[in-house]
Length: 333
Image (cartoon, rainbow, N blue to C red; front, side):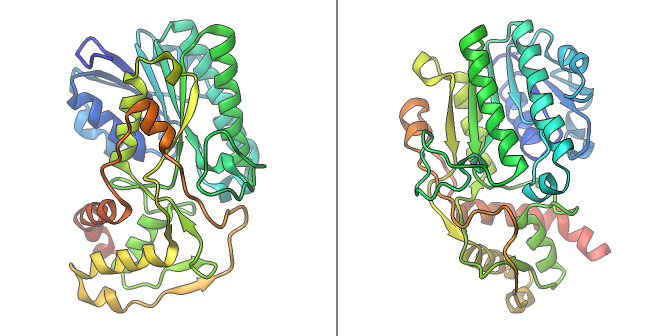
């Protein structure tokens, strides 16, 4: 892929956490970017600095509406499909809406991309697809039974992408994201991700609540590693590397206790009192898996993936962003 002004990329969910970082990256690379978002979970503030840029177009629309998808994808060379309703707990509470967005919306986007003749459709898959498989590390060809409606929808995405590749010749690549974190991740709302939520609480000297005993582990993945994977997925020319899925992770696991200790260490550099904030432990969360660790060998071998940020390195960068951007909000409250 030659990233020039003639390269047009549609990023669905482009006003969200991951999507807006992708918008930043590809605009900086010289691409023309179209952002499709309904602002259900994304925020206009995330892409406000691009408004007025001739390289950037914002389309406010919903992937559940096929006409919106067709409008957004018109003339696009590539699609980075990030739009989805995330969160296991949200899907347990409201499986119908989760399915409508994540399955119905995904099928709309695949259909619109096929009809528009895009070169490649790269989509956000999920580590939740591994379900109850106890194998560590997780390798792409071995999955278990899904543990939530959200996990089912993300697995169905992979099945649909495979069918569109084999039946219609649409090139697809799925990226199974593992616990992505970093700048712009929303700390608010009932389904906020654990890292920004804990950061907000610690900055306010409130005790974070860990689900379980804190020994559950995750392969936390910094946003810049995810951006790298998306670019590699667009650029790869080896036909044997497309029409498949890849783990998108760092390849190491960190317990929740270790993660909180990192947060307290980095945040106490700005506010020493945070080091003394107590941690509270609660019940395990329904639908959670105990441990998650990705094998990234496939991505290394076929895409040339070399993640640049470990959990600690990424968290140090993220904490600085949180402090600079979220501390005024905490202080105001």
